[in-house]
Length: 352
Image 1 (cartoon, rainbow, N blue to C red):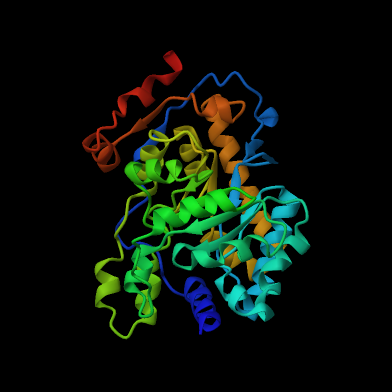
Image 2: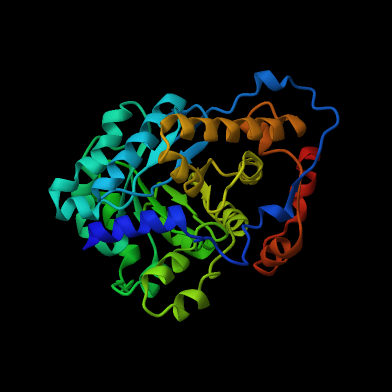
């Protein structure tokens, strides 16, 4: 049953090591260049941003994780309460379970109950696109994410591996729904060629969800009777930093950088590359079991780390941060250069 699978995923992410084993996000190879004369007051740094027409007090979105099992109601409630108080965005896990079983709807709708003014993102998988309209109408959503998870589907024992019409599904949803469509990956990243196609199909934003954080191949390995396939593909995917640059260099729609963002410093690097917002999931999932106050404390620490990084490069707001100098080195630089993206320009942006 789908509901049981949702619970399995929750428990595995909480208790087991489900992150990429050797692959890193690439942010460890990006250096923001220190400014000994910041010429700003740290206490006056402004990190508000506009995302798809709504103001966020910080460029952070708690990306979709759960729903569809009674145990997930409490998790979504705590995440939504924290997002409402911090005035950041929040997403939910795939709504398929609630479309097929209306008794599970409260595990999702609790988010709007607890967060009446927050930017909330619904969620449906591309293979279940026939449920998009019902998912979008389940509550007052600000956007609907269509998630792409070919890696997970390929490893999952009950996976749907027919991806023939994913692009047409995005195009249809973008034309028929009354709310913006965000296309998101689930831990393997998006390359620029796919980003261009998704934009032409009508996607209003892209959440790259790159490699270096949670590996859904790893999650499915624990569920499978045969772990060989999951272990082989555990480190599959485009590192988050690489995917962030590739997509931002290719399209002019908002980009959420997510996948292994574990600190405000990681966030500062992603935002400096040009991301509109960053997405976090696993770090706050564990806090949500404690309660919304624990989630708030975690995110407030994250925000403080972001502001310290901005202060040290002299960025008084996110626009300044996107003009700051940074170095892209190592495998991240090599990957981007081989893909035809010149990285030197980031090192001297402030001189332009």
